[in-house]
Image 1 (cartoon, rainbow, N blue to C red):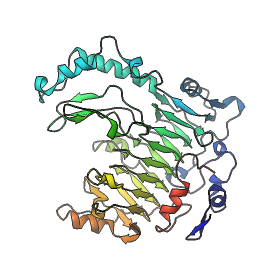
Image 2 (image 1 turned 30 degrees about the vertical axis):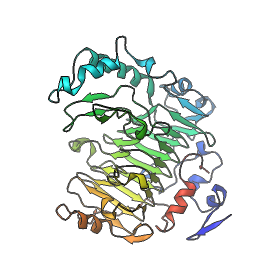
Image 3 (image 1 turned 60 degrees about the vertical axis):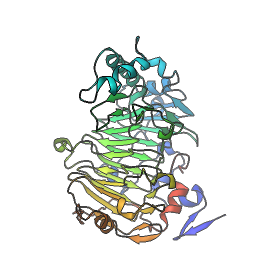
Image 4 (image 1 turned 120 degrees about the vertical axis):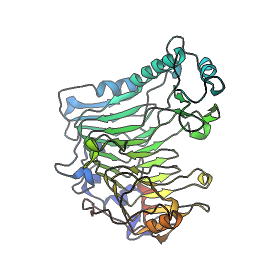
Length: 427
C-alpha cells in the first residue's frame, strides 16, 4: 500500500530514495558521505568518515572484543567498521567487574540515610570498592573512535548493548544504522546530598561527542531496551538510576549533524553543552543540526542546549499517555544558547499542554516557527510564556540556518519520520 503525503511517496526506502540527497543514494551505506549542505557537519570540508577506507582498513566485527580491536590506534588512514549482529560489552554480567570485597548489601547498610544522614557525601571502604568496580566497568565498556572512521551496522539487526561510544577530540566520524541500548551502570553512586532526599547517580552515555568536529550520526535507534527506568528498583526511597544520557555533545564539540535517528523511552536524552561554566571551551561552538529524528517516550533533554547554535527542524516528538506525570519538556533553553526550531511536529496526549514543550533554564533568545502540535499550528514561545508569565522566553535567535538539503511541511513530518527514522532503514 502506498500513501502520498505532501508529494512524498511513503512506500519504504526504495520509493523514498529518489527524492533524497546523494548521501542516501549509494548502494553501500558504509561508503556514503554526508551530502553537501546537510546540516552543520557539512560545514567546510564536510564529513566523509571512513568511506574511502581500503581493504586493509575495512573490518567486519561480530563481537565486542573484535570491535575494540578494530578501533585500536592506527596509522590515521580512513577506517570502515561494519557491525554484524549485536555486540555485547557486558556479556559477563556485573559480577565480572566487582572488586574483591565489594558487597552491595553492605553498601546499602553502611550508607542508609538512617545511619549516614544527608549532610555528608559517602566515603569509606565500601564506597572505595564501589568506585574501583565502576572503574573496571568503565575500562570494559568505553571505546574510543578514531578520526576518519565510519561505523555502520549491517542489515536490520546490528547494534550494541552495554557499550559507550566515545567520539573524543577527533575529526570526521560517521555512525550509522545501529540499535544502541543504553549502557546499564552496574555501580551507581549514592549521593545523600543530592536534593532534599538524596539520589543515585550513574555513568555511561550511549554515545558522547566530546571536543570532536564533523560528526554525522544517522539512522540509529537509541533506547533503554530491556531495562526501562520502570524496571529499575528503588533503594532509600529513590530510583536506583542506572542510565545516563543517550547522546551527549559536549566540551567544545562542533559541526555535528544527527539525522533520521530514533530516541526512545529514556529520561535525560540529548544534552548539548554540559556546564554553564564551560564558556571557555563551548562559546562559538556546539553547532549542531537535528533533523528528521523521532523522540518518543522521552522525558526531557530533546535537546537541552547551552551555548550552541542548534538547528532543530522536521523532528517528531511523541509524548506517550503514560508519561503525563513524568514528562518535563522537549527543548531546554540554556545559557547563551541560540536554538532555531522550525517545522517540528509534536504529538501530545491529553494532560500535557503545549506550554511544556519549552523550558527556560537561563536567559537566551530562540526562534520557533511553523511548528505544529497535534496537527495544528502552534506558537511554542507564546504557549510557554502563557504558562510561565514570570519567566518568559524571548523570540529571535539572531541567526538563520542555511545548511539544509530538504525541509518538509510539519504536517508531513510524523508520517515521513515514522517511515524512515531509526536503525534498519538506511537506503
